[in-house]
Length: 238
Length: 224
Image 1 (cartoon, one colour):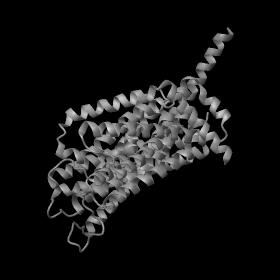
Image 2 (cartoon, one colour; image 1 turned 60 degrees about the vertical axis):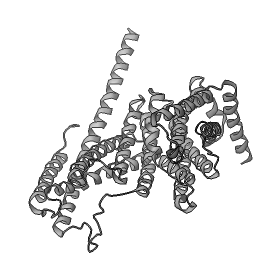
Image 3 (cartoon, rainbow over the protein chains, first blue to last red; image 1 turned 45 degrees about the vertical axis):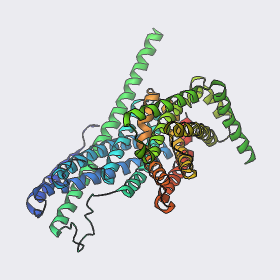
Image 4 (cartoon, each protein chain N blue to C red; image 1 turned 90 degrees about the vertical axis):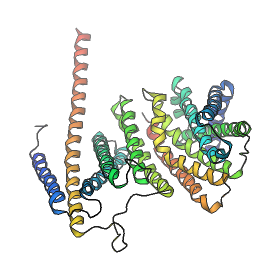
């Protein structure tokens, strides 16, 4: 029964419905933006994915601190799973951003603070997995990984701050009403809010599933090691 | 406190003496640094009018790349000769082991800067002995060695070692790179202090954050 969980499958079905509903809202409820047209609709998933990217790394950093305090390997499993999911959604945010930027900014890429910071953040966490791969001992892997997560999490805001000092053309969407800049209608806000909510539930589902998988894998590795030890012991005795 | 200071001094002295006798690290770093200046010359066709603006950036890239080379070596003695365990047993307070290593790495970076700066000035006929630029580089070197020493102490214990350090270090160093280059350009173009002061603050804040985190977590790097 270690691999099957009724509550989790309910959550999975619920998440699936939420995501479908979010798609529906984006396609049929949210109005078409007057200047940018249909391509603006990618925005609802772009913002939600970027949010999950940051959430993933926040959760990972919190787990890293907790792991260093009490040394429970399950916390490390959650941290690593959270980085994985965060990395995936950061990539999605980057790609959806590019799809939008090509027609609107007339370029796939620009050295804007948010783009730069997200990408540097992604590289930080790719390095995290490289570090983990270089270490065999599970406890050491978890310790070093946690330390790196903490340093990474401390440097990302500074990267953003520094990049922002340099230049920005990324639109600021919130709090622009009445300034004549890009502003959203209520239907757009509602769609975006729902999309962020649906993605957040998806995050919880993925995090729980992936962490369980990781923990099962850990358990399996331990059993295999024990078995090998026993076999080796028998040979030595015989 | 007095005890702690003398421990720190002894640990730094040990690193410096070892380097003085072997000269492994500095020779390689310097050779690499000067070669990179030559490579940059041909890669970018540095024309005298652009040079003034580009100098801090090129200088910083040269310094960080050769510094990474040095960082990779900084825990080799402890690893290969197993003196890490001896140090842990002998030294009260694990933080001082890290701080000593960080300070000796920082001093190594300063030596590198002291030698590279005149060579660059000479080769490009451009006076880089500007107090503002030197201050920027010193602050940058501290931030670099604070983040680098902690990461090097971890990568030294992994399978990929030297291969891993730059991949781990460079994304973390992003704010330092931006700040050093921007502050350096501000200094060299003769702008008012107010226009680049914020970058010096970024460097200072980064240095303080990294040093604090390292002191807090270093126990977990050597703990077995």
